[in-house]
Image (tube, rainbow, N blue to C red):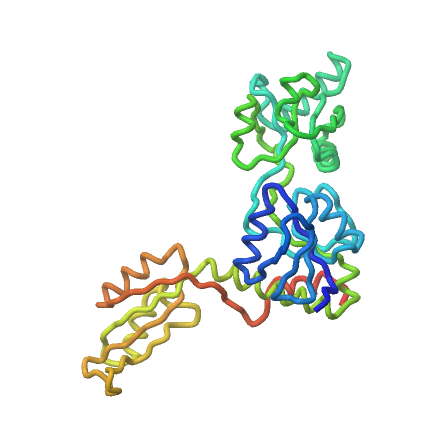
Length: 337
């Protein structure tokens, strides 16, 4: 089948492989026949082709309609706002980082954004120049500083190792992405309170006009959100099965449901165990199946053990499909449909 639509995604960098891994886990595996080529396919959605681009070019391609969908970092979308871009998922659960202001550790009196405003004014009044800020995120930085009453600054466009700019002397401080803060500390820089411009993860964006105008594309987006929502929902839960003895199925169900942790989504499923010759065992054993939250898994196991449960099996839940994909419903509300 000819691919009518295009999903743009990173061709390299920190979120390239995590994006492919994420889509595969969601059941949306991307096939790239030749690693040297910049195109691929998505067999789950035959109408969807894949185009590998730089993270910033993903935004450009979606904005101009060359690609109808795109996965990139939210920080890039934030830096390059466009009226034709609609954010379908602002957080896909990976690629977490934040865009921050970082000043030299030697600036011991600068601990927050108010201190920085005073330093900017001091530079202007006593040194006769603006503070210089090295960054790739000029729009985000300028908008943030103006919003906080800081107007005396000069942005220095920088690529590569921005953290070295203050040491090399061509900037006084930086604005850059950080995930753990390690690189900042290694370069004798520190974050300041109130200096986080935006927190970001990988996100899914779309071309608003293209989605509104094409029902087939809208349906492809619906399928994609169904898989992603169901996969993200499933990651939070485990399916637990256990053999428990009791008077009746209702008796077992009541005991299981007496604990909030083991109530399940709608309640436990209880089924009688039959012997191999097809005759119900006189000991009244039942197999119970329930869905429990990942963080409560051990507590759930301990509860069914206390009830005399045996052979407890816990397995990850791959998908939980709801009545509708909540993200798709939210998207419809954003669009003029």
